[in-house]
Image (cartoon, rainbow, N blue to C red; front, side, top):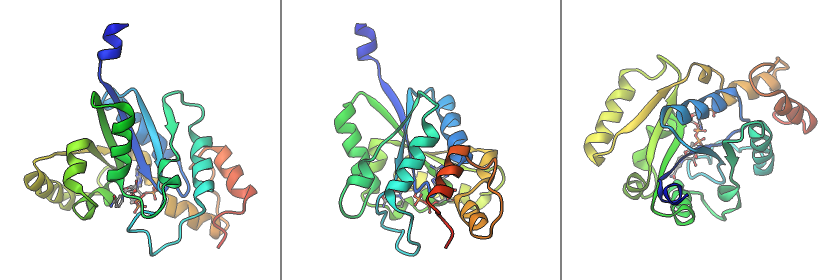
Length: 209
Ligand code: NAP
């Protein structure tokens, strides 16, 4: 028991809008868990990210509930409402700081999100503090982000002396944007996300506009 209490807690925070959550996100989370021997993944639907002024995201409660529904069958998945409940603009640095306070210093945190978002990380709030507090995993589909991504990751590495890990997940060919477009155009979304999420979307008439 003593040993267990002393050993490091290792988990990932899966950051994203999840509008809606789909199989690409779920496969990415298990792939990262597997790759880095993590204890669990905490899904963190975003609240008011600073860069999302251009497209109105769906109601945060819908995004949160869909995330809960999609993750319920995996005992190693949790969902946090921390960003949704936090007032004002949500910065990842505040989220990670909060988690470090809860879990203590003997914790290794991996922040997973899409490569497009991570490639803009130098513009994020308090990026240096973020790099001190957690590791980053950029998720992409094979062959999608080529030399440009490598170059940008190298630039970040030489500037901040921190490596951003990359994971290629074939199911990330599925995208929330595509799913929303399909619904709007009356096309099927079957097999792109869990059935319970499709039922939820239909029940609340999401993404029709
Ligand atoms: P986004 O622009 O909506 O997504 C960028 C790309 O990444 C999309 O192709 C998206 O695909 C994909 N993606 C998003 N989350 C993913 C995940 N967890 N796994 C795999 N692919 C994912 O980016 P966002 O969702 O708003 O932001 C991503 C995260 O970065 C959020 O947690 C956000 O709070 C954080 N962020 C923080 C700051 C800051 O602190 N200043 C600034 C920007 C972003 P789908 O649409 O299919 O998901």
